[in-house]
Amino acid sequence: MQPRLSPADISQPQPGLFVLSGCWTARTVAGADRKLEAIGDSEAVEVVVDGSQLEAIDSVGVWLLQQQCKKIRTAGRSVRLRDWPVNVQKLLDVIEKQIDIPVLRAPRRSFLEKIGRNGAAAWQGMVALLSFIGECALALVRIGLQPNRWRWRQVLKNIEISGFDALPIVGLTAFLLGIVVAYQGADQLRHYGANIFVVDLVGYAMLREFSPLITAIIIAGRSGSAYAAQIGTMVVTEEIDGMRTIGIEPIDFLVLPKIIALMVALPLLTVFADVTGVFGGMFMARSQLDVGFHEFLARFGSKIGLSALLVGVGKAVVFAAIIAIVGCYQGFRTKANADSVGRQTTRSVVQSIFIVIILDSGFSVIFSILGL
Image (cartoon, rainbow, N blue to C red; front, side, top):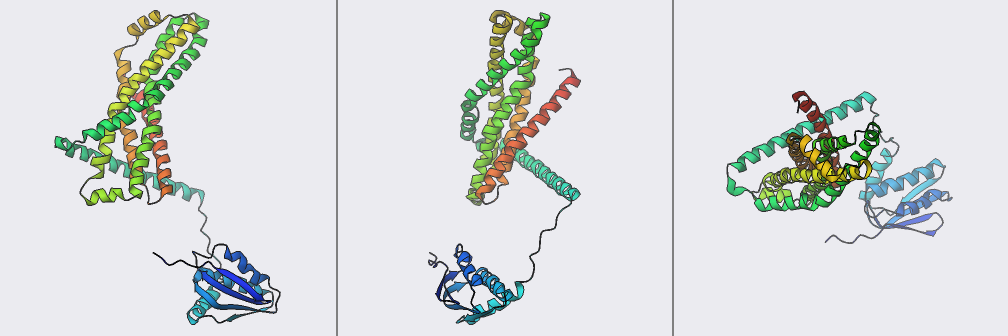
């Protein structure tokens, strides 16, 4: 155990005499610097600072003292140091020579320099992410050649956490989204007597676009952030280093089970969102457009092809891989402090959602070109 340090203190036995006591170091000087201002405010012609009762002092304490001594000399009065150790006197002389040197200010960066630095940082981050994806791919191939190394319990546990536990929020969100799509469509279709086409609107919108996209966004905020926080906390507590020390690859143990589990869970959640979203649209079509459940389901089965469902499920598989990889990647980039865990967790959610939306836009263009 470290010895207990006495707090810094200052007393004034008589006018113009100040006695410093305790430890005037960076760890103990907090609060005592205000008491030290009494030296600079003293009206005595000669101010005497006694250091006989000092237990310890470092450059921080000396710098604070020299600031007040400079204030007194500027006012035309004198300062005398009494009973100070020789080694501290040397430190006082060094600090006194440096006290008038202005503190260097950080150079202001131009707008173009900021753009360049941010661009370089973004490029380095992208290269690091691609490198991490490559490491995951190599680890998947390595484990694929040795089936006995698969951690099925970890995979099933992650499926339960990322998939089954997310059913309520995904189902409710998709149901409300289906109601919104049907309601907005009903307001326009009613004017043209095309009430029945609300089935096509809800079916294609939910199966192809909204269900996989909204499910991916929910999972990115729910599971992707959890992946980053879990791995980031393990980095801070040095559990990752401990795993490497005993010969366990963190990617094999932490990353691959999460990627595989999410690639299984997210498509299933998307199908569940399809069902609840269509049911929400069906409920709104009946109440707003007088389209009955039987009529709705009959047209849905005849007009909405299997390709619409497969397109959404295919997107969900890609989205799942991106969310899991980005979440784990940001977790491994955590520095050794708690603040970094929160920062990397936020970045994982933002980057995951951004990449998912970019990919969804790209899929729309590609599917349009292919006529799907």
